[in-house]
Image (cartoon, one colour):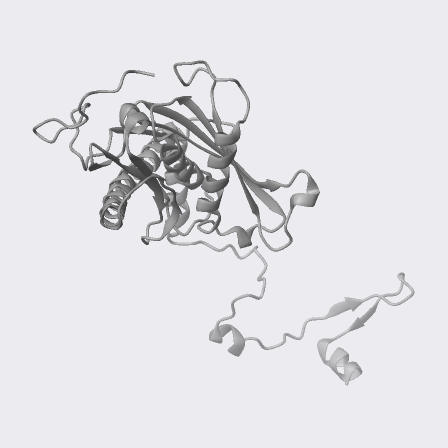
Length: 319
């Protein structure tokens, strides 16, 4: 752990990393980077580097965990052993279990779980590099991975934290501000402004809490705009790739065939040898349809002695 700075905010109101007190860190988003996952996202939030993957809806194992009327949401938050300066012991710890629980609860109400009964939606978070605010950054990445997987949701979830250092409220704490700050309050918010997660570590007055909550909500709105833009850019690029990969010759052949099929047939010629199939009959043909007195040959049981009858005789017989 680095030494505590003498001041977190200078005379110009700027923080140690040059940001203003109400400014979030730079964000980099890449969507759909894992081929075998149903949805995935790689997100850099300041110096945080996070990978999120979503699998499902899929069959629940073990079976006794499934619910008959809705899907279950499982959220696993894990920090890689190399993600922090002091090598971390691999495997879940108390903090990872706690972060997984509160993050899962932040998503459960926003996912239409009733559409997938007896199934599971699994969200996996891997922290590749940690620099304060990993739970909020992980929620932002998980929300994009769910959207990439096509999971029906009421809206994207955006998350940001507000804290207090030097008796001043600041937005999106970095590592030193998180380690030596007086308070830390992460929140998660849906697109309709509903708070789905709120935690606080430290002490805030009532006025500080209200102001800090407003700052955190504004930070979530800014993050939502970045999430939305990243999704739009991703699917626009995907559509361009599909169009570019299409073979040009096959497209031309299809257009030629369709144009040939739509061309009208000019001056049709019908031969007298072609029998009338009875589909079309003209009025003139009906008027001229007078039975000719032609003789027809009707074979009796004795094929050697055919009986010759006229049409009139046949009509009388039928009557």
